[in-house]
Length: 410
Image (tube, one colour):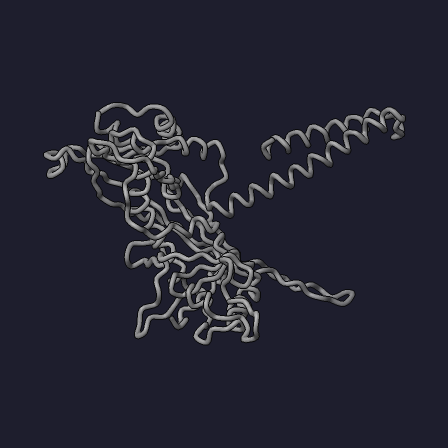
């Protein structure tokens, strides 16, 4: 059962138990009523266990996927085909199937496409369709296998997958209230008056920032109803927009019309790994502990990971390395070239540790794809120009939830 179904069943059983007790005169249960009450009690206990397990799974999903846990919406988004969006515009026809249903749902939420484009789920940024391979011998004539397209080796999307919180369907600027100070408790003697103290508050704001790209596909490629071609298009859209968003979540600067990324957030904690050792790694993580932060991941890049994986935790025989089995100090360690080394003479490695659920991503509408088969230079060749636009912003709720070391020798 789903979590809401479990809670409804539990509430019904509690109401049944309450009704049973209310029907007893004097509050004493007959043996039959006691047996029935015990049975209801057992069912409630069982449902409470189910509720705890279901809640735990939903929490895992929310932290691991970095997406709103809305299963119905996610199932619909999973059925949307980017090829349908492009082909419908090329053929000048209405969208159908899951894509049409997605347009209706978006319209119900007040979201509309601009300039005749088609809305597609932002979740396409996170999806990867596995390209299959085959060992079958070639036949004559040559068989052009578009589904075996060999794409570029690109950086992997990372920040959303580490548990960033996502707010969807935003309209105007979004203000998030934030507590900055707590009330104070005082010990007093008998007859003494308590001193008044108040919680203090501030706000952080999400403001729309738009990223977009122009790219092109051959008309035949866009019209092929092949699952692997769909995967190729999704991958390319992820490359031109998704990677730009992911990069900005780490390196973004307001001056470049981007969200402010983790490395440029005011108040973020810093540490030193210039003298790399187990002690300096522990000292780095200690900074988070002193701020009551439970980190959920360590983020680094390939060169820094190599240094961590070749540095022993202890000089004694049989010691393990600082990074082993994809973990650093027991935390999952993720390696991505979306995080750049700190440039200099020489370059220095970067390591980020923290609670990535403290990142809040706001999305205004969804991703809009506009296919134009009539653009100059493309029409003559039968190619299709594709414009992708996405509006979002991101803020860090608590800057001290992250600690950065950018002095690791490589």
